[in-house]
Each structure stands twice: as structure tokens, then as C-alpha cells.
Image (cartoon, rainbow over all chains, first blue to last red; front, side, top):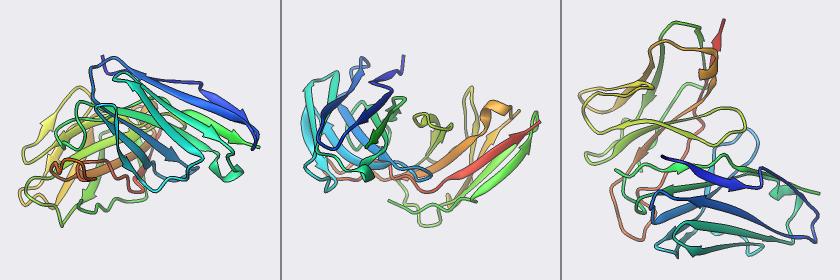
Amino acid sequence: DTEVTQTPKHLVMGMTNKKSLKCEQHMGHRAMYWYKQKAKKPPELMFVYSYEKLSINESVPSRFSPECPNSSLLNLHLHALQPEDSALYLCASSRRQGRNTDTQYFGPGTRLTVL
Amino acid sequence: DAKTTQPTSMDCAEGRAANLPCNHSTISGNEYVYWYRQIHSQGPQYIIHGLKNNETNEMASLIITEDRKSSTLILPHATLRDTAVYYCIVRSQLNYGGSQGNLIFGKGTKLSVKP
């Protein structure tokens, strides 16, 4: 089983709202990732967690706050977003971070619209 | 991570083989070639990866040239459901805690399979 699940599938929020995206995997993977994908662009890496600790933050604004409460769960907390943050947010996982022999598996994504 | 070059778009007739090229002339000896695809508004789907030898699985075949400077992904009998953006990615070797080994997506090839 190589399934990564993400909830919700769609999210519409105002600029003053606080919301969270959730990602879950049960493959025993110890690396989890958040990507952002704007329309007609490739996915871009935002954060990497390795063994539940933040390993990489690709200079993401603080209005995006990741959290990894356990080895199976990854959250992305959203606060005071801007309309330009509207995008497809993708979660992925792999056995370990950074090993080029470990395949990353992606979830279906959350389509976020900020009004 | 080595840079890749792919055609922007390709067409293929349904039932025929789709051959998607990728140029990675600056690839290093321990870098792997990965292929993912992304069907519209879904998460990227892992297809196949390889180092030196040709690889085959239930989805596709990967042919890597002897000098490793280019590769071709082959979908043997393309169907309409294979219409997607195909990403060729070169992944560097592990550098624990760094960004090497992560997926860096280029623009990919938009494959359109036509009846």
C-alpha cells in the first residue's frame, strides 16, 4: 500500500481565517513533505520533516505553520493567508529524507482558495 | 541536482507506444533518474526510476543511454487515461540534513493521448 491521504480535498477561506490541512500515511515512512503547486506550474517544496522534526523550510512565510505530531501525521496550519496563496497543496512521504533510492509518494492534494 | 530538459508537449495515438525523452547531460554517477506523472489536478504519481540499467514495471519502461546523459520513458500501449504531465527528475545522493535527494520538479512534458 502506497497511499497518502489528505483532507480536506477543497478549502475556501477568508484572509482572516485560521484553517489546517491534514496529511496521513501508514507506510512507516519517517520523512514527510509539503509542496505548493500554483496553476500550470510544477510542485515546489515547502517543508520537510524527518523523524517528526522540521528539517527543511524553503523560506516559507510564517503564515504557513507546519506540524508533525507523530510519525503518521503531518499538518499545515494556515493563518492570515493572501489570495496569492491559493494553490494545490500536496503532501508526500518517503522512507527516509534525502535518500535518492527512496521513492516519494504523494497524496491527492488540497485545493485551497483564499478570498 | 542535475538539470533535465524535456519537450513541452507531445501527442500520441491511443494504443500506440508513447516515448517521452529526457535530457540530463550533467548527471553524476550516483544520481538516479525518476519519472512521475500528474493527471490534471491530482497529486503526482510515481512511475519508475533507474540508475544505469533499463527498468520495467507494470506501468512503463525506462531506457537510459549508456553514457546516462539521456533517458526515455516508454508507455507501451498508451490509453486516454495516460494523458498527463510527465516529469523527469534527477535526484542526487544523500546529504543528510541538506536538500540533496529531494525532488525538484521541472516543467515536464504534457502528453496528450488522442483517440
